[in-house]
Length: 214
Image 1: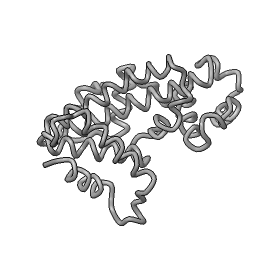
Image 2 (image 1 turned 180 degrees about the vertical axis):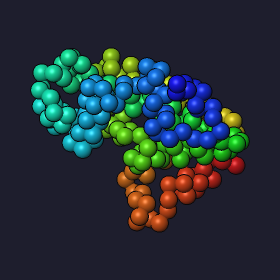
Image 3 (image 1 turned 90 degrees about the vertical axis):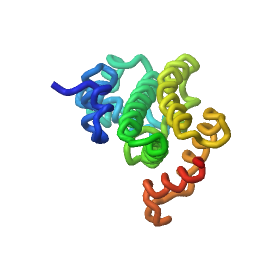
């Protein structure tokens, strides 16, 4: 039997994405990616990233997984609900992955560094498929759906705040440090290209870490 996500997150080595997904599926927190609903969510994440939510039709989604358009509505009432489902699952996976990385760290400074690297990997599509949708398509969600995603996002942000507090970042204002980190990390999407800049993501994470710590 597979271990729970919480137990795995406390392991001394970081989990592979497959291990983490398996544990989250077992706990009922993520949809099984091999199930019809899971295949639909994964296809939606790809198409929403590639084409954008507005330009992706229900017919496009159905064609991507080889089903009739009407079959989609057995799983979701609308395209907007599909987007909300994608965002929820992306947030859950990103939180679990960051927690796993942070728990493997040996000291508070290493924990903060792990959070920085984990978010950079998600932003640059190396670890959390669909992560960019959380920003790019936020306004496409209804107010109710935004509230649902924000409640899940709180767990992700708490991992950050705990790491910032433990690392004793300057300024004695963890929330401000996190806001500044959000801006710094998300903006790397517009200028950072590993092959062009000659910096790996771990190297970039280490440089950003040095800026935000004593």
